[in-house]
Length: 408
Image 1 (cartoon, rainbow, N blue to C red):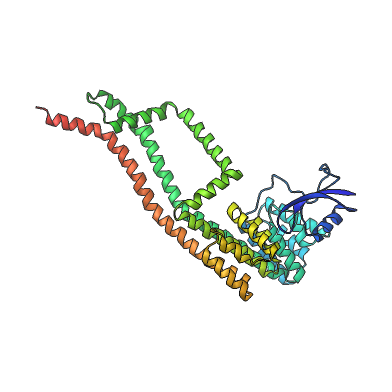
Image 2 (cartoon, rainbow, N blue to C red):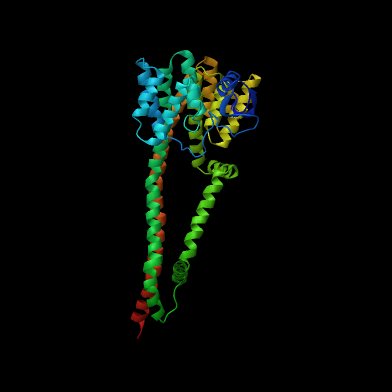
């Protein structure tokens, strides 16, 4: 019986083809032994009519890092007490907080009941458990230290979630402040200024240029709001869609890297993520080439993907992985040198994790400091705009008063 499949090889590259086996489980196991991580498999050559056991659903939503970290931590506690993995998963399924997560855990439990290994069961939900998660679980299973590996996964996921939440929290107030100031400007132009327009028409003096511009903008807003609002929504949707495409992502990434200060922050965050994931995989005794490939699949920045691709090719030729890092302008120079020293002393995984811890702390402080600088800057800029609008509205009245006072 033939099966068509698609997945990833040990280098993290997409592969697809046709294999033979008596059933889906046997074919999947053969591919796994050959080093292929199966994403979808179906009976027949190119036939996708039969229901694939490991085919992902396009509409499934991803779980939050906090949920995955909590799952790993609770499962580690149960496994460390000697609870069989199937019973532990069933227990977590019963206490799931929502139906979506209960469906995820239940899917893993059903694969375990069908005789799959835990890593294979997790592999059936790649939209929830990525290749790094599955590989570390497989390493824990093979070494008999699944509880320790789950604890390590919980720490890795919690750290990534903490960094993300810190950035969001730091930027939330400046964003809120910007929205409030823009709302005040719209209110002044759309509601307050039109009330002055009738008064301006009764004045027998020419309006200042700034006032004429504001009146024109106000009339445009009021007369064509029905066209402006859909146009803004379409423009916003188009920009968001374009930024999700590869060309849009690359353009945004290049722009951020060239921006003063922001480029250094992007490099630091990217270096920290690569160092943490690669260090965790190497500490779990994952082979270097496989660890680099898995790390490449876990990062979204195209520049770091290309860097890891060069590092993988270099390691395949026998070069140290630090060579690609040192030659790159993305990976922080001091961190790259630390990686080289770690290679020479045989403590590379420890050095990588230490680099990630240090950079995450520095990045959190940098983002907070940047947020503190943005707040007064936004206040000055938008406050100046509000003051300009207010002065422009009252300037004709001041001119009228001055001319009346100077009349004989």
